Length: 552
Ligand code: SF4
Image (cartoon, rainbow, N blue to C red; front, side, top):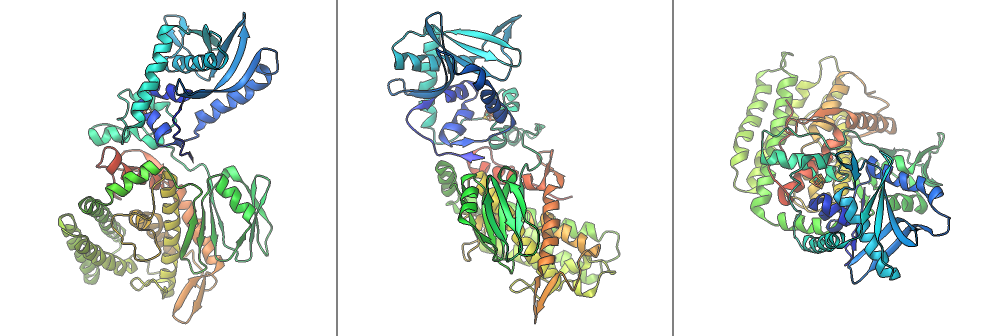
């Protein structure tokens, strides 16, 4: 995704197309500066690339002509201008089909306004009268003509006027009442129209317009002596003792450097230029920093700051979050011990503690008391986790409560390392969405960790790491000797152990899960992003869907 902070005075002619398609789309593109290059956008670009060899180079034909006019308040790039019968004619190419009135092909209104805008710009530039524009619809192979008459000029001026009004709005316009438009809209994964409709009408059955899987991979570098370099348009990892591996840059979603591997400036520049975040995690598994090439939309961040300055609003979000987290933990440990005969009185004591905290969370009156109940439930959960480890597992793999800095047993070393991977994945999703990770609503900014990342990861520690980790321990997937480095009472993962943990985590991110509220399935990596977008809707859209995912 590319985010531009384009907000010039002139309006792009192609944005007039957006105004006529959906005013919210115009706002997302022009005011919030969001461009999401989905398959249809790429296909449109390919179409224009493919057209070039045939359509340029002849006398009286020009392709990709930039035109702008201060007096019209408009700018744009016409696909092609041709001289026909003495007159200049702008041509616009569209991948889809023309609209039909009976059998007759006619232009779609949004396309007609766009080509008329180019015609008016060319008139301004050349002083020549432009009698018509033409639109080539490639799916049904027809060209339709758009007369540049008073009606067309009026439609362009009205769209420019409406664009100016929309630019001055502090918030996004509502979603389009025509849900068929959303199915073809490239910004549907950002706009989440179906989820807005669900927030308004709980009987609405959302169609999934959100991509289900990640299209790019996260590259982890765990060899402390590795070099990360650029080779053409690929990222090349050169480990000390293994063969180099290369990743085409368009297949990389993030680069995670564990320990002291060295990245060249050229490699970092390439990541930054392509909007790929780089994350650094210490050899001990602590998240150090992230490089994000783009700060995101200023306007969206201002809305975030404003909303998260309200203490009551923050407490409401924090209650939803803690209730979802503690409820999930309780359901999981009850489910995992249902048939195993592991529920002795000591285990049931932990359950009672969690249940009692869960009951009180919805009515807390302050963040401190919420932290108190959440902390009590969390402690009881980690004490109960050892009941989930199968009796066939080596004793050295059993946890004894939760120990963090440093981890004091193998299980805790795995927990800590896994949580740093969860942190990185949540941080990446927050940066992708364009929010500020340092402004949260539950965690306080006491450490170097970003509060919003710490907040959102509370929803994912269990599903992204605790559950796959406990499964892997019960399948005896860990080598108690080679996967760990032990120094006195401190236990860390060895390089081999980290590689295994990363494989387990990345496989989990690709697993799909059906979200119980929106009702469709997504990979876990996409679920994180969806939840952050639902969080943003709490202050800039229809609220009520954040923090409602539940494991059964
Ligand atoms: S998804 Fe629908 S409501 Fe949202 S911008 Fe696109 S067309 Fe408009």
